[in-house]
Structures are given as C-alpha cells and as structure tokens.
Image (cartoon, rainbow, N blue to C red; front, side):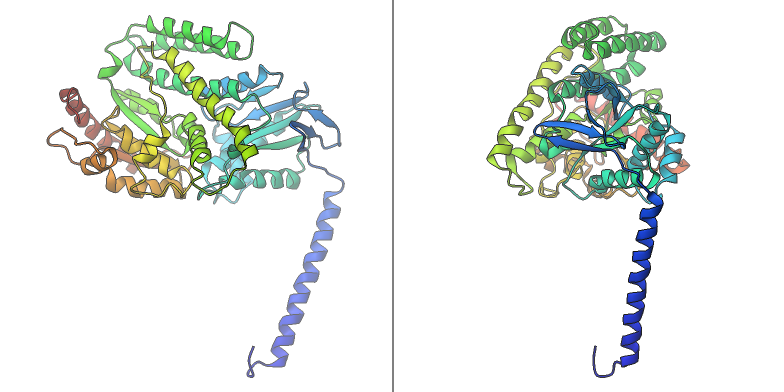
Length: 481
C-alpha cells in the first residue's frame, strides 16, 4: 500500500475477500451436511498393537477373520509370498492381482491424471477390491511409505484416505507403515523372507524363459514348485527353507541349452514399483527373453538395505534416538540374516547367480555424481546401473513412471556416465576391453499404455549394442578389469 492507493479499491478488495470466506464457510457446512454421519474406517494403535475401527465404530484386531489385509501388486511372485508369510502369523493377508487396464481406468477416474502411474494403479486396485468385498468384510490396504527424498510417494496414503472419505467407501482403511520405523505391526522376518525369495524366483523364471530346452514344460514345473513354496510360507506344508531346497533341486533337473554364465544378462533398474510390476513395464522382460536376454531385476530388498544404510549413517540427519535405534537394529540385522540364509540355499541353483546386496558399494559407485544426502531411489538407480554393467550385465535398462523426478534425475546422469570412462570412475578399476566406448543403456518412462514406436526402435538398437558388448565380455571374461 502507498499514498496512491485508492481507499475505494482497498475496501472493494476487503469486501471481496470477506465474500469468498463466507462462501467457503457455507460450502463447508453444505459438504458436512451432505456427508451425513459417514465415518471412514481407520487404523489405531495401542501400545505395540494395531487394530482397525470400522465405519460403525467397531474395534477389530488386525487378526480378526473379518479383516483382510491387501498388499498392492509388486510382482506376481514376491507379493503372494509376502502375503502368505503374513498369514502364517494369524493375519488374513492377500496380494492384489497384477493390474490391468481396469485398475488403470479406476485410478484415472479418481485422480487428475497428472499423478504418476504407481499412484493410479494402487488407487485403482483399492477401488476395485473395495467394490468386490463382501458386506461384512473389512479391508485394510497396506501401503509402505517413505518420508525421505524428492518423491510424492509419501502423499499416496493422504490421497487414498481423502478418497475413501469423499467416495464414502465403508469399512476400508489404509495402513501406513513407514520404512524408517521398520514397518511395525507385522512379523518382519517372515515377510522379508518372502520378499527375498520372490525376487530370486522372478530372476530364475526369467532365466528359464531363455535357457530351458522346453520352455513350456520348464514353466509348468516352476509354477508347481512356486505354489508349494507359497503354501509352505503360509504354514500349510513343509518349512519354507526345506521347500526352497527342494525347489532348487527340482529346478536344477530342468535341461538347459547353456549355462547361466554364458547368458546375455540385462540389468533392469529404476523406480521400485514399476520395475517389479509386469503391467507397468508392459512385460518388457518377455520381449527381451524373445531376443535371448535374461533380465535380472533390482530386488526389493535393496530398498530395505538402503533404510539400514540410513539408520547406520543418518545421512538425512534424522537423529534417531537411542530407543529407536535399539528397536530398529534387530530388524536391520534380521534382514541381513534372512538374505544370507536364503541365498546360501539358492547359490546351489544353476539358474541364479547368488550375490548379497551391498548398498554401501552401490552408493560408492554413485556418490561422486550425487550426494547421498539427497535421499530416494535416484542414487540407488545410478549406483546399481554403473555397478552392474560389465560386471554381470551387458546392458542396463532403467524404467520409471512418466514424469517421475527421481527417475529423470537418474536418467540424466546415467546417459552421460554410461560409458567406459564412467564405469572406470565409478568402480575405480581399469576396463581392459579394447574397442569399447559407450555402454548399452536405455531409459523408459511408462504411463500404462503400450510403448510407442520410438521406444520399440530404441529397444532394438539397445539389443544390438548389448549383443556386441556381450561378445566382448565373453572374449575377455578372464581379464575384464
């Protein structure tokens, strides 16, 4: 305001502001009247125990037979084992089916369509299962959360809870479990075992699609062994570890064309939901299998190890209290124990190259390009890509949702660094393969629709480059670095 301001203009603006405020208050009163007495179901905590309060105010244990705990789809092998592991402790865990266009349509119908693909699919899954549940059933939608890094993932549950209230979806609650709290409320060890085993089996299935002499029969045997393992995780069979040993033994009897060490390996990295969900990535691993490439997808347990890395180094200055560290450290070491135990079993498999996830090494491959204090998946994507190429993989594909900032950040850096000089700087080793400059790298963004022709063309070029690099890797296998 200054001496040239007209009093009439100021008064007009004040009156307009007051008019807007009155209209807003009237709108809020109308909205509350319209909503009536609807009450959204919600999760409550008493001490260390969680329970759900239904839309009628009834208080139920999460182990109540009427309560179903739904896990979003992040792979058709990993999440069923996770749900089975949860069910073994008295919960009624179910895993969502791999999404289809139906879930995507539901998600788009209940969002502005500006949100990323994982939000649209997880919201679509919530709406679909809420429509299908029986009247007396209470559904709890489990959403793991991350409060660090440049991603809107932390707002997914806020969006979903508002949607439940807006659409008056009765007896449906969202259970938010934070990664920096160790996902409390569930049997973490059995859940982690299911995640690790599922990720390994996904890589084994991808290997069978390329290496098996009789692909159809091999996948039939695989499906049977997987179902036996799922039953074991839910305490309806032998112990999971015993069943894993049997699975390895039976799958080793499948005739293969050549050993895994000779196979053309592609490392698939990127945003955790998209890289694990076959609908999001348009079954890209099958397309690559048809071209003779075995796809190895970055495991979910990589993120769990990254949370342990935060706990150890406190890179985001979260300043964990001594009590919280005392609570989290046993869970952290449980993850290491479970991974080592399971991979000791699968190292006997001729279809899997067992190697423990080393997040410190992954970050060491990227920290000269990005500060570890920028939390989130970008540094893991960069580090994994530079670590895997020429180590096990002859090419790297990074997949992420359309317009995902961490994915674009990783793409921008890897597009410049995915060459021999970048590999040498990251690994601190000299590459001894002559005639090699740029290394095969492809970044793909997906919005749930079929890939456009330009992506298909880039994929063809990528495969030609990966073939050439693989031949050089075989020729110099004894002296790569």
